[in-house]
Length: 113
Length: 115
Image 1 (cartoon, rainbow over the protein chains, first blue to last red):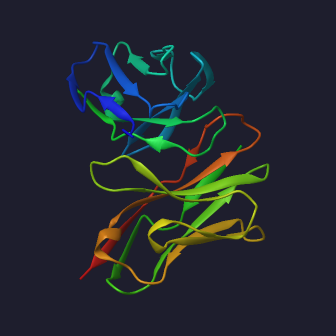
Image 2 (tube, rainbow over the protein chains, first blue to last red):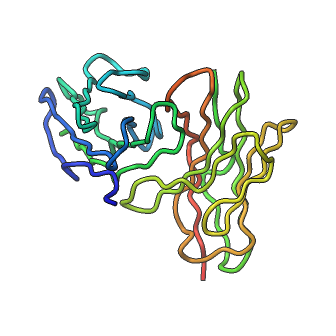
């Protein structure tokens, strides 16, 4: 069974641009969560989607948004990029909502210049 | 509110010696606690999970952790370190008051294993 797939693996953008990251969960998994990892702030929860609905949201500005499709694939979007948005963005999937066993992808490394 | 403190940002051991990675947590409710490992350029992998069934939890690759409520600790141990254990380790808490998978991560401990 394939693991959690995140694309692209690396991205370079400039300030003010927007970016979309993609996550394909493990087949059969219906919940997708997103985390941001930076050297300064560590790993922080962004949001969680289940059945195409955002169920939880972390403490991030409205520039960070996401969505989930009917096949459970998820995308997250960051608009008006800032230098501080440079980070590794990790996606995790689980079978069900509140299923605490998460499987993580390898992440998308975003660099904002 | 919940929080996790990993007491050491770096731990260095020799191959074949014991590993101890320390974690203290704070939670208003009975938490679920986890240890995840992250190898370079890889995603996070679940090592073990505590959910109140037993205070000593055995995980993968010979790791185990003991939940001590009186000390609010959940330290990770392994009797004998292997070179392949070199990675970053995260202690994580999930508060049951929050439905879903909103995990709170500790700052991480980088484990170095010397030959």
